[in-house]
Image 1 (spheres, rainbow, N blue to C red):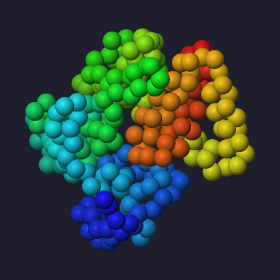
Image 2: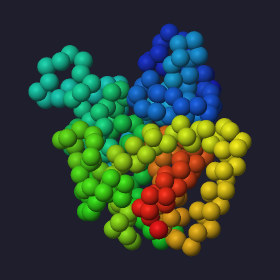
Image 3: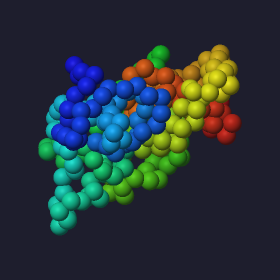
Image 4: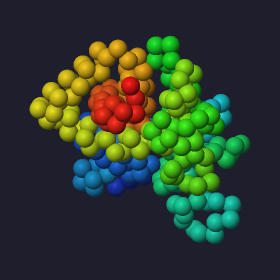
Length: 252
């Protein structure tokens, strides 16, 4: 258990205070975005995800992964300090800070991506985290990543009920980054919050089971990627994403 105030080797100048602000920030440890609870030094504008403070060694897909403060150099890289050699095997994006590394498989993960659940079940629909993509992603409509590092195929959440609803982890990460600011605005502005509640009611009352399943699934993954255990931001972001998909006619 972590305390409300503590020292951390990544910021030895001052102790870090546990705070809970409803604003967007970039973690100075893993360099990924987050919101709400974090450890912060106000004087230096320094923030760490809650998980990035402790970073215990963990298991990903049955493999032991070791925490490192920075990525290991690539085999052929001759740079002393390189942030371009390693990309996350789950999302395909470059790793610029804290990382989990598996020596056995040579996998690397952003700390947040390493926390992704192997499977998420909503009602009778199960989304499994797979290293192979059997069909096109529901977001980008491609089997291979449209972004990310070209040599990393990226992992996907694959539905056991509907082949049309598979998602690259990269694409879910993109959704989260694109909608974070709008979700925070919806949480903080009364008039937008009311509109968001109406949207939530409309989605939950729809007869289309898949709309509700996707909303719950995306909300759960967004919450993991942002380190928000309350799921409030993740759920709001899911409302916005599903609304966009409905307006575009991508789901029905």
